[in-house]
Image (cartoon, rainbow, N blue to C red; front, side, top):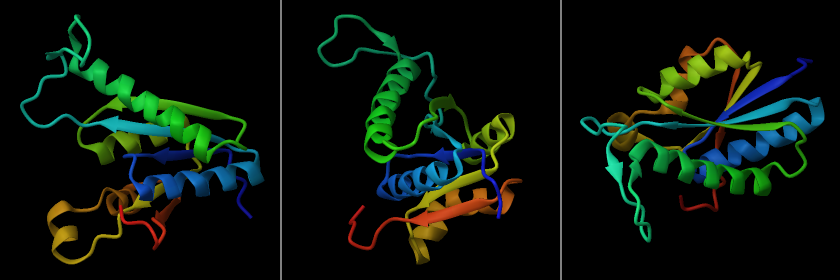
Length: 157
């Protein structure tokens, strides 16, 4: 049996990602592994990370990437509390990167991930062909083993 020590969980905050996070937490608890929860900010083409935005209710403008990072960290903390309550060693990490897949693979290598647990939307047909699959690309390209977790059937995400 493999002894997982570092588990990377990329998240896009979908139900599939949250199912993967729950699974990673269970594996980490059994193996005493650390979990690194990762969100990659991928700005649309033509949008500069230094673009200034004014958050609702604020009189001060901040860089777009800072606002995106703050929002991601807030969501990640909520998911950490909800899905990783029993996991002792959890790190949250937000990276700016495009393409997302390459950024996930780079982080996996830099942290020495023994396992990548990734959620999938379960799209098929035209939706899969047009949108592609980040999870599928990670499975194909990662050096570490990848566990792909599909959202629960009762979920409508």
